[in-house]
Image 1 (cartoon, rainbow, N blue to C red):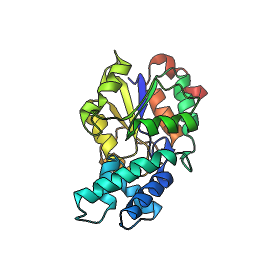
Image 2: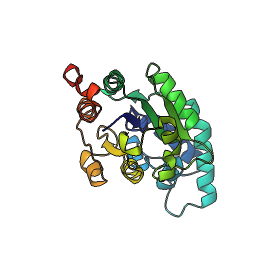
Image 3: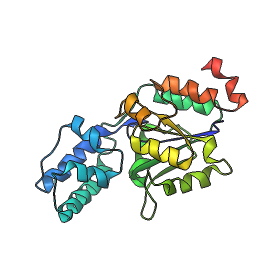
Image 4: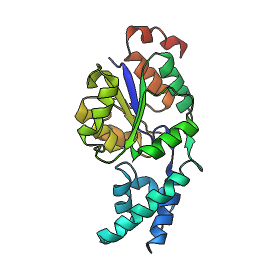
Length: 230
């Protein structure tokens, strides 16, 4: 039974790639490395920005250069993280529907917490997320199961089995399953439905509307009664 729903951010709630790609390319260029088309940058995200920098840089780029790229990115992105980022179609309705079912909502991202909060406050200001967690020093990142600690604390006394984690990457599916949460795919993001099923997605909708129905059907009885209203 699902009693709470937690979301990834990039590629799940919002299409953040244009702004990520812009900052990443500015950082690469500033360090004398080649930039990439926005579509190519989609393949770099999902494991945190440090891993994205490593994937975007040419093979065998010195570690010192990678650190410089990362530093430039982290300085640039907070100033541009809401320039062109937009919600995916159907996501506002998904969130409103889950809120209407009385399910607590949260966000857990590998993006820096400051940028995550800024994006949520700017683009989803009316959504009553119980928490918005991102990367901070000393906090493990997905797919490390330890990344779930603040989520489980915030949602106590719920167990992992009562929580659905919605994400768009194999990292998200691996994380959810390793913790014991229901792994729910967001194939409208940066990976296909087939990729996410292959990575372990237990709920594999084609759209936010279908995800709402799947989550509602797995929610407590009081939520089940409202399915016909969705």
